[in-house]
Image 1 (cartoon, rainbow, N blue to C red):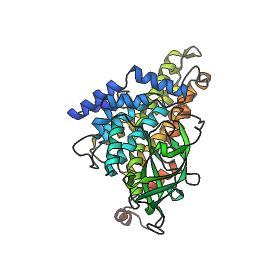
Image 2 (image 1 turned 120 degrees about the vertical axis):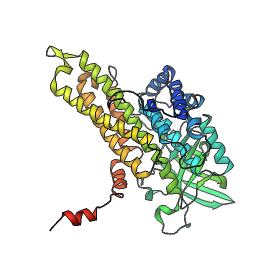
Image 3 (image 1 turned 30 degrees about the horizontal axis):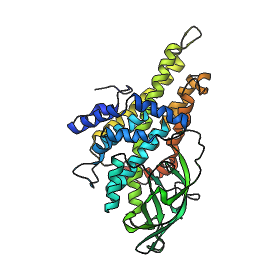
Length: 401
């Protein structure tokens, strides 16, 4: 058994032949070339589609999604999801990690809910790396509140007319198709979230705006889009009444992936920081000899170890990715990751603030995306709070007022 805090990847947990094969596929995919592409993506501020193609060629997506239980909720087990996410986090490029996991979460939605021949082909092409996918929900007045979605789909000529705008559609400048969240007016009057539906929209049917300049995650290219197009009925992924459930399924995958990515990023930062503390001397001794710094890093390492074991337990549990667990894991990991990166950057001192001398500053900026993407802390806490269970029997027995 490996102790908490070691940098052994989650893929080392492989115990079944299928899991061992997946671990080998990850080893083949995450080589020096992939690392170089990830490094270049941050400098070029562009998402490298080639990484998706490499993952596909290595069989990562095929092993994760093509099985005998193709449309089963259990398909795409948590071991595969978290092992891939943690390796993505180790790349040191939040933009690349977020982009790959967004593509993978899109596949999750299509595999679970896509039923038409068109949607099946779209998912197959995404698994094979021929097609890059993305998801668009956020609008100017919406943010994490899907009640604010105003984009609509109206029945027209045997299909649907989609009209609307999305403020953030990450990967839209390079993707081939987008899964859009829209309303179907009049379908279920007054139902709120019940009238949300999902459509797969070819990128050429969208007007993609200028790419946003962002604080971090530069490889995760993001732009606004406008849609005013007619689509055949077979582009409908989830009809009103199931749209929110379909989106939640995909977002739960995304949130768990973020937790795994944070673990990989924390391993990077802590390993680099401990090396710095052994090499850098202050007041005649290495930084590691200063108790205040040593114990601070020990505390961080211990808590990252707890996150590691939590993800390992989840990966081996055989459970399905439910929304509450995904929300809890993501918000807890993201907040820990923010603290780890902030403290590691602090220990590097002035060098941590210089982007040409260390990556700590960029990693610190990138970590903020984990606190916002896939749902803000407050939204996720509300999901967790909704599942809180009172113990009335114990209360009656122990509380005497």
